[in-house]
Amino acid sequence: MLDSGDTAWVLISTALVMLMTFPGLALFYGGLVRRKNVLATIMQSFFVLCMISIQWILIGYSLSFGPDRGHFIGSLAWFGLKGVGMAPNPDYAATIPHLLFMAYQMMFAVITPGLITGAFAERMKFSTYVVFTLLWATLVYDPVCHWVWGAGGWLKNIGALDFAGGTVVHVSSGISALVCALVLGKRRGYGREPMPPHNLPLCLIGAALLWFGWFGFNAGSALGANELAVSAFIATNTAAAAAALTWMFIEWKAIGKPTILGGATGAVAGLVAITPAAGFVTPLSSIIIGMMVGVVCYTSVAVIKLRFGYDDSLDAFGVHGVGGMLGALATGLFAEKIVNPAGNNGLFFGNPALLMTQATGVITAAAYAVAVTFILLKVLEATMGLRVEDEEEVIGLDITQHEESAYTLLD
Amino acid sequence: MKLIIAIIQPHKLEDVLQELDKSEIYLKTVSNVLGCGRQKGRTEVYRGKKETGNLLKKVRLEIAVNEKFVDSAILAITKAAKTGRIGDGKIFVLDLTECVRIRTEERGSAAIG
Image (tube, rainbow over all chains, first blue to last red; front, side, top):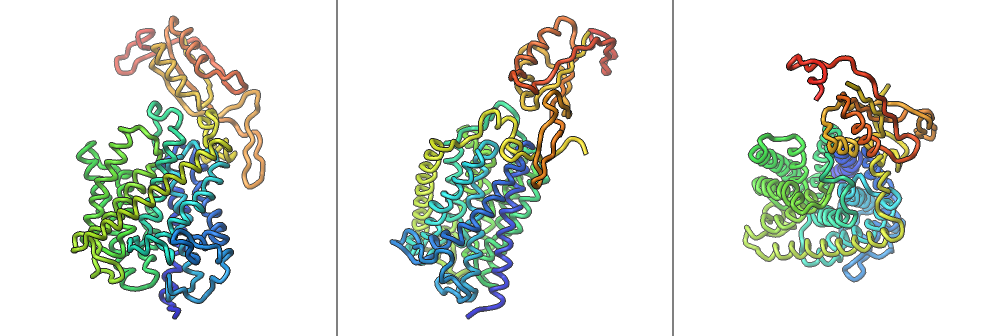
C-alpha cells in the first residue's frame, strides 16, 4: 500500500542525501585543500555524483538489491531497472514506490566513493580516479551493500544491524581510504611544507550541509514519515552535538583553544558514528556514542596519524573509517528493542551476542574492502599510474587536470 | 646596500626559501603577483571558451642585503628556482640608498640584517 506521507518524506530525504555529496562533501573537502587544488577536489565529488547516478541505474542497484546470488551479491536480473517500478517492494519498503527506494539508495552509492577522495586529495591523477571509482563502486560498494541490506545478504541474515550505513558507507569507504593513502604515498612535501586549509568558511559551509543532509540520510532510513524517523532524527542531531563539544573541549585542554574546524570535524565524526545506530538507540545513548567517537576520532586524527606518518590528507579514514567502526560496534552495545522492535537489544540491554554479530560485520566488510581496494590500486598503478607527475602536483591539480583556476588575483 | 627583487614560479617558493635559509638570508617580503614574459600568458578554458593571454601567477621576493650577501642570494634563488624552461623568472638587483629599522630608528647597513 503506497503511503503519500512516506513517499513525500523519502523523496525529500533522497534530495537531502544528494546535497551531502554535492556541494556538502565537495565544499568540506574543497576548503581543506590548498587553493591550487580546490576545483579538482570539488570535481571529484561532482563527478562521482554524475557517474554513479548512471552506474546505479544500469547495474549498481541490481547488484546491490537484486535477486540474491549465494548471499554475496544481487544478480543482474534488474539490469537497467527492469522490473523495478511504482509498485512497492515489501522486502525493502512496503509503503513507497520501489523506484523511489532505488533513487534513495542511489544517493548512498554516490556519496560512499566520494568520501574516499579525502585520502588521496591533491595528488591523484583524474583519469585514474574515474576508473578507480567506477570499479570500486561496482566491486566493493555493491557487494557489501548487498551483504548488509539486500534481501538474502549474509550479514542481514545473521542479524547485523546497520540502520543507515555505518558499515556499508563509512567502514567500507573509510578503510579503503587508508589503503589509498598508503598505496599512493604522501603528498610531495608532506611534513616539510605547511599545507594549511585554504578556505575554512568554505569547509564549514560544507560541514553544515553535511549535518543538514544527514537528517535525510538517517531519519530518511526509516523509509517512512513515522515515529522511527523522528527517533533517528533526534539521535542524529544529539550525537553530532555531543561529538562536536567533546572534540572542542579536548582541544581546549590539549592545545589551549577550541577551534571551529575541530568542532566541525567532531560533528561529522558524531554523525558517522550515529549512522548505524540512529534507528536503534535513545537520545541518552546518542550522547554517549557522540562523546566516545569524539575522543576516539580525535585520537586517530591528531595522535595516531601523526605518529605513523601516513598522509590521509583530509582524514577520510580517521573520521569515516574509525568513526564508522566505532558506531557499528556501539550499536551492539546500545541498541534497544524499546526504540525499534525490528532491531535488537545490545550488550548493555542483556544481549551480548549482538556485539559479536556487529564485530563480524565490521571485520568482514573491512577485510573485503581492503583486499579489493589494494588489488584495484595495484592494477591501476601498473596500467594507468595513480599519481600526477611531480611537477603537476606542485603546480596544482586545478590547472594541470582541468585547465581552470579557482581564484584570480585581479578583477 | 642592494635590493634584490626576484620574480619566480609560485611552486618554486618553498625551495627558494629553503636555499635562502641555507645561505643565512632570513629577512624577506613575499607577495603574489601576476605577470608574463616571453610565453605571453596562459590559456584557460571556461565553458568551452578559450581565454588566452591570461597573466601568469608569479611570486615576488624582495630582499634587502648588504653587499657581501648579494652573490649568495642570487646563487640561492637561481639554484632553487631554475628549471631551464621559459617562465622561470628574473632577478633584479637595485642600489638601495637608505634603510631604516622602525623599532630602533637605526639607519643604513646596521638596519638591514
